[in-house]
Structure formats: C-alpha cells, structure tokens
Length: 415
Length: 195
Image 1 (cartoon, rainbow over the protein chains, first blue to last red):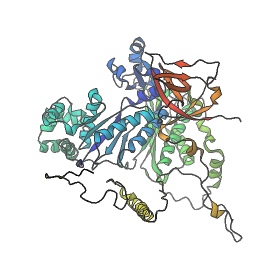
Image 2: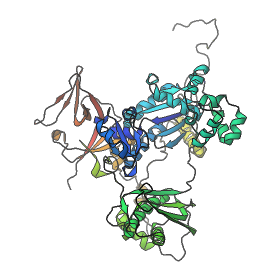
Image 3: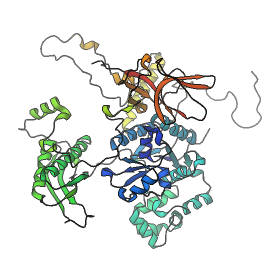
Image 4: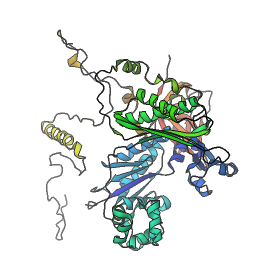
C-alpha cells in the first residue's frame, strides 16, 4: 500500500489563459500568435507562446507595437472579461472535483490540498489535466510540492519542460538538482516575494532563489519580517501557508475605466460614473456588503503634455452602511457636480466604495420599500436611471473583441 | 485452489478480515471534510449504514444543488380547508436538469446551414453541446476540420472517419490523410423555437 503523503499541495495554472479562451471558440488560432489588450485597448495584458517568442513584452502600449503586429500577422483581441470569467468558473469547478480543499487563487490559478491522499498523485493530476482540457478546452499545467511555494515553483517546471507532460512534482527532485533549479530562478520570481522585497534582497546580493535558500533565516526575518520567514520555511518544505478556502472580506470595491473618448461635458462624465456605480453596487450586492465611504475620481491624460492636466477626486463618509443603488447613484452625481470643472478633457474616471461591512442593514422603520420593490419586480434589469442614458461615448474601446459566446444568447458561436 | 505455503514474511493469504465485511460492505477511502459539513456527512453516513442493514434503497441528498423555485406550501391556510394537493407536492420540472448533464462542459451554439435538416437541425436552432462526451460513431458532433467548425454526424468504419451530412443536397466530408480533425463536442439536443 502506498504511504499517505504527509503534506502535498498542487497549483493548477491555465496556460496562457486569455489566449486559450479565444482559441476554444476559434480553433483557427491554434498555432497563431495572439495578443490580448487591456480595457480600452490600451496595452498588452496577455500573450500566447507564439507572441511571446516574437519578443512582444507584457504591458507595452498597443500603439508602440502596432506595426510589428501587422508585420508578423499577430492576432489582436480586446479583452473579453465576460467570456474569460465564465470559462474560468467552468475550469475551477472541474479542478474542484480533484480535492475537497480548493483555493481559487486567481482567474486562472487554483491551489488544491492533496495531503493524506493515498492514490498516485501523478496519475490523479494527469487525469485532472485531461479532464479540464476535454470539458472546457483549456490546457492546464500542474505543479506539486509539500508547500504552496514549492507547488508554485513546480508549476514553472511543468510549463517549461514538455517532457513532464504538464505535471511535475518537485519533491521527487534530488537535492542537488533542486538547488540547481533554485539557482536558475530569480529571487523576485519566488511566490510571495514582491517587487519591494526583491529589491531589498538584491541590496545584500541575494539575487536568485538559491541565494535566498542559502541565506541565514535571521537575516531574512529582519529584512522581510515574518512573511519572508514563512516563505523561507516553505522553500525547505515546512508548510506555513494553508490553502485558504474562504476569501477574506473585501475591503473596497473599485470600478473604473479609461473612457473611449476624451470627455469634457458634465452629462457625459455623469453617464460614465453612473454606469460604473451600477457595476460597483452589483458587486457590493453580490457579496452581500454595504459601504460607508464613497470616492469618485476623474483624471485627464497625464501623457498628453500639450493639454492642461488635472486630477479631481472627492470622498465622503456615510453614517449608516448603504447598499442601495437608488441612494448611491444620486450621491455620485452630487459629488461629481461638486468637483467637476469645465474645459478639461477627462480620459479616466471611477468610483470606489470603501469601508465595507456586512450588509445586515436595518431598513428605516418608516421607509416604504414596496414601490421600489415592485418596480424591480416588474421591470428587473430593464430599469435605468436617467443619468445612465446618453451618447455612450464613454464606453471603452473594444475594437477587436470576440463574441461573449457563453453569456449572451445573441452572441453564440455560429456553426 | 492452489494455496502456496509461505515460509517468508509478508501478508499471508486469507489472513485478516474478509473483504467488504465492514460497515459499508465496500472499499472505503479517507477524505478531508470541511468542519461545517461534518455533521451533514456523518448523518448521511448514518442513514446509509442503517439502510444497508435494512436493505432499503438509499437516497443521497445533494449538497449545493441549484436553487429551484419550489413552492413549499401551495395554499395558505387561513381558517378554511387545507389544499388536498399539499401532500403530493413534487419538484417543478427544470429543463436545465433535463438537457444538461455536465454543466461545466456544456455550451450552446447556434446552427447556421441546412446540411443537417433531416436530423432536425434547422438554421437558427440552438444546439446543446457537451464537450465531455466521447465521440462515438453515429453521434452528431461539432467538428473542427482544418480549423473550420462544422456540425455533422460522425461516422467511423474500418479505420476511416467521415462526417455525414443529413441532407442529400450536401456532400459528406471524408477525412483525408494530412487533414486535421478535432471533435469539439457532442450535440445532445436541439432547441427549435416556433414562436
């Protein structure tokens, strides 16, 4: 009988997730270089392997590489979050069949706790990989290790070397090979070591993961505190970071966009902020939260040196937690009225709901809710506030967006 | 029976308890259970155990089953007579449950051409496609031939694969060597709306 594995974690990561989503609904793109642009088609936020090997870097503005992309016939896509979000939830559900303990870490990554499993974990994870691909069309790689930090590291290997067939267990590596591997990884690429920590470490010439591994734990703790110490211990195989099944309470909700056109008219900006408020409040209601602090902001484009720049923002607090769209939308308009200055071209704006608490609001004893409830019941999503309607010039550009194949009846894949 | 006499160590044949003589009469597996579900799982197991003893059919409760709008009481009892139907309430029929068996793997696509008319697929119909099902010969499939989508009936015979149209006006697609065929999913039903 196989021995139960003491502690074992897996990190399942989708390969080039956004590009893979596009490929599911357009198989012609299978071996083509694909680039996905950020909201408003600003800069590159995702690349397929083919695009990576053309030297297209993450985060470059679209206009800088426009010509290169035409030359190399790179497929350009505007980000399609409704599609990516739906595909992500499908992938995560399938991954969840493989362990009772799952942490959805990001839109395309999930940790699994495999501790105590007696079956062959390599086979178990191979069948996960095959099932996710067959059920959703999305390719994934799995890294395994006795801690989360090691699992994350193992995932890099699984992705990089095709001979492991997408599943790699780092605990199987002999120690010399493990140290050699650490030597090839930059210290900032260890999971949990952020930019600032990496810089601090580099100042005392800890440049690679190997340097970090061989450093004195006391030095690491003085430099990075208890979090750094945890990551250090995790590298040695002592699990300090458990799989977190319940995401902690959100602290704030930000809903902001770069506008599709420069806006200077009050009503146009008000339309944008009202629509963004609705998005923010939807998220507030979904998590069953209420807010006691509202901020709004509008910016002009800081890169346009030929125009006057201005950043306007305003925050107010509310004494009782609010979660009602009908209260928040007029409030946002009022705030905007106070800060708005004519004569500027605003290119970005947003709404921040802060100081969130659980929404167990006691409605006013004398407030009559029934009219509002009735309206909502009768008209549902068809009901708009007047300030939400307008010329839609604020809507972000999404020139190259594919259909929202899985969330809109009128955008289904046509065959 | 050829029983071997073992002089060496290790498990002896026939030693230990008989297989499947435990409480559950089958193999069991160790599993982690979130604290919040322990009671639910334990009570399920208890019910199961007691039912095993009495050989009654076992009904497993569904955790996190999708919420349906099931009326708990169809009639309000004010002072009069309770509805005689209350005792016979059943789940309302849910088309999703009927048509979708693997939620994560099911996609809707819209049919365009007339090549599958005789199979009942009209232009504009919504096809329910399950990506998790094996592509068996005879199934209607969404196929990708050299990067192009098509809906046809899959035909496998003596190592040859073809995609058959269900309309005499359309030609079948024989898969030649060197061309690439991917089965994207299996069509499980067609939704044709009249009004």
